[in-house]
Image (cartoon, rainbow, N blue to C red; front, top):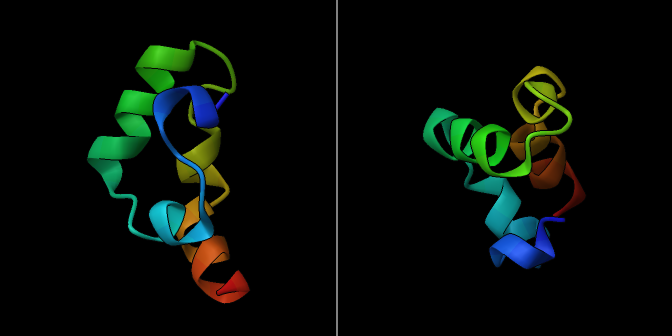
Length: 48
């Protein structure tokens, strides 16, 4: 799903802000709030 939005790398995810989290929630319509709640950006930074 993220690939369809142009997100392909952990680097991209690591730079996500609240704005991007909200956009993902709006566009995907599924997993509402999950990116922010699970701290995807923080997890991506750890994986880098």
